[in-house]
Each structure stands twice: as C-alpha cells, then as structure tokens.
Image: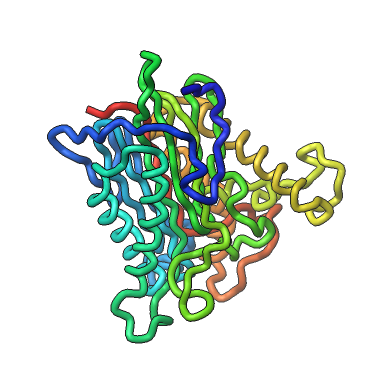
Length: 354
C-alpha cells in the first residue's frame, strides 16, 4: 500500500474508499474519553466563545453550542465536533444529542471494523443515529434544533510490506466544520475537507445540517460526504468548528485581492472556482505559519495557537460590541476583521498511544 500521496479522497459512498484492511482495535487497560477541554501529550481539546460580554456579565450567545467528543485507544481514535446552528437551548441540545448518539454508536461497533469500507459505512450510519436522536421524543418534530457534525476515525492500517505502521484518517461531515492533517515531516497542512462549504460567500449557510430542516423534518444533507487521507506516525489530525477556520479566511480577515497578488478590485469579481482556490491556498499558508512558524509543534500548542489566533483577530469587534451593546456590529472586515463565534479545536497526534 503506497502512502506517497496524501491528497485527500472525497467520496460519496463508502464503497468508493480504497481497498484497505484495518488493524484490530487494541484498547489496552483503559480507554481515554474526552468531552471537554483537556491537554494530554497526544491530545488537546478546547472550546471558547469569542462573542462579547453583555452588561449583565454573561457572554452574548451563551451557552456555547459547540460540542466535542474524543475516544482514544492504543491504535485508534474517534473524534467528533458538532456545531449547533444559531443560539439558544435547541441548537445546544441538538449538538449534545448528535455527539452522544455518535459516541454510543461507535462504542457498539469498534470490533466490527475490519476494512475502510466498514468504517465508512458505520460513519454514515452514525450520522443517521445522530439525526434520529435529535428528533427523538419530540411531540412536534420542529421543536428540535439543528446542528452540523464532523466525525472521524484515525485507524492503523494493515501493510504486508514490513514497513512501519500505516495510518488512515477517515471522516464524514455535514455542514461546515473542517478537518486538517498536519504533516510533521513536510511541515505542511492539508485541508482534508476542502470545498465542503458550498456557499463560500455566506457564512450563515453551513451547507447542510442534522435535525429537522426541510420537507417533513428531514435533515439537510446537501454536503454530506466522506473524506479520507493516508497519514504517518506523528502527523497531527485537527478538527475545528467554523469559529476557527472562518478566521483563516482572507475575506473575513479584511484582505484585499491586490494584497494576494490578484488582479481584481474586489472579491466579487472572482468566479466561484477562483475564490475557492484563493481561500484554500491562503488558509493553508496561514495555518502552516501559525502551527510551524515558531515554538513547539505539539497538540497542546496547536490548539492554543489556533484558539488564541481567533481571539486576537476578533478583539476589535468584541471591544466595539462591549462598548456599544445596543448597536449593530459593523460590517467592515478591514476595520473589524474576523468572525466572532463559538470556537472549538481538537488536535490529535497519530500513532500508537500508551
């Protein structure tokens, strides 16, 4: 099995995945489960709100509607981030239910994953379970909230060549959370979920969501896809909510096309393909600069750097809204860059865990 190319594979169905067998799960004496902020040698997770403080002392948009889950075995990890759509109790409950159903489903299926096809099939089934959990017990289905969801597996793959262990990072996504792979050898970032947000000019449209949204309470599955990439020992898988990656976007950061050597007066002059390519390239370079620019490259440092970046970028907007809580937020990314949001990052170092 060759791992020379680490370009992600985007598939619509699990049977389009590479023909690879997965090494049986090794759980050891204990399994690490994380549902909140943590820092381990191989794992770091954090959720914050970059919204302003209200005069009452609470943060605008509380409670945080991002939820996360990580389960680490000796040679496998399950990771998920859900971002409840909008504010309030309903999106928070939708995100909680989606994460709980996703985690419970994989608790029951771990030993049954023998191939990448199995893993892809179970990922898609877990999304079905998440949607069903969101609407379960509702007398009126429209009482339920909606949420985006990204769930992934880092798995050890069988290799008969005698080479060091090979690894794969497989994830499913509906909505606008993102997954990245950081190569330690090449000091390079790869957007595993490249292009998963269809509407790149309107951050209010995540492209899809679980929970009742269309028809008779069906989920919005416009951008539901599987994504896969081969990876190596010590690479770092990072999954984030849009509160992180929107603050890696040149448009949201107030950059002008000319500053990126693009011959255009405004971003509206670019075609969809040109804008997507420009945003993707800028995001990749900025992520590499943040992660590899200085200091240690470890999960705890990566999570801290990304969260700190989001807080720093949005500080002008946050300060303005705290000073003028009854005014509308200015729509001027040059003067007030970034996007305030619920902001979540999970960083996991790939390899056999002790």
